[in-house]
Each structure stands twice: as C-alpha cells, then as structure tokens.
Image 1: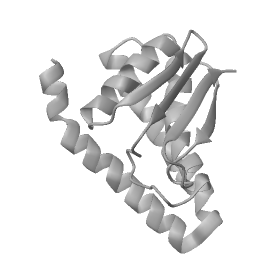
Image 2: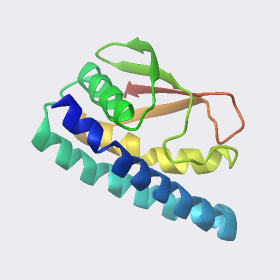
Image 3: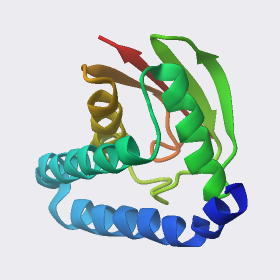
Image 4: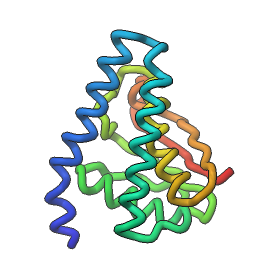
Length: 150
C-alpha cells in the first residue's frame, strides 16, 4: 500500500504546484484583492479533501491528522519535523513549500493555508486555529505551523 501511495506523489506534486502557480499569478496581478478569493477557493479544496479522506481513513484527533499529513507530505518527497503532537496540537516544521510559493508573501501563504485549516476543521468537526510561526513564502528558511483546537 505504501508503494502504491508513493506512485501518486508526482501527480500530487503537480497538483499542489499548479494550485500554487495559479494562486501566485492571481495574487501578483490583483494584489491583496485576490486574497479573499484564494482563501475561499483553498478552503473549499480543504473541505472537499476532508470528505475524501473520511472515506479512506479515520481522522478523529490531531494525532491521526499528524500521521495522515506526514504520509501526504512523504508522498511528495517532503520530510516534516514534528515538534509536538497531542490531542489538541500539531506543531511541525517543513523545508519545502508543497505549493511552490517560496519567496512570495506571508499573506499568500495564509490564504493558501486556509485549505489545510478547513480540511482539519472538517475532519475534527470543530474549528481549528492555524498559526504560521515561519514561512518560506515570507522569506524564512523553513515553514513552521501550529494547528490547535479552539
């Protein structure tokens, strides 16, 4: 199963990069006015992704989500450093942006992260807060995010 999952990696990488390229181009052309649209579309993607995930595996808490997220990132060749995982918090660092928007802006990163937030909120059935401590789009050397239950 793990080998089959890895074979989807190039397709997932292409999908994430395409979303990032389109969002980056839209943001470059329209600036801050594009951010609410990018955020809304990203959140819709996250919600629909959660519906698919629910059919494939149970995600009942942050620990389950952390395992699923690590698996998804490994499929696209990204290694995560897990800083903390508990029932209420998932804190990680990553060295690459799956969407390929390094060096763009923190606000574009936040708009795109609305998708991860909505996916996690939908899977857990409650609102989740996303805190971006560091981000490659903002020029940091890594991404660091903390998801926590509200």
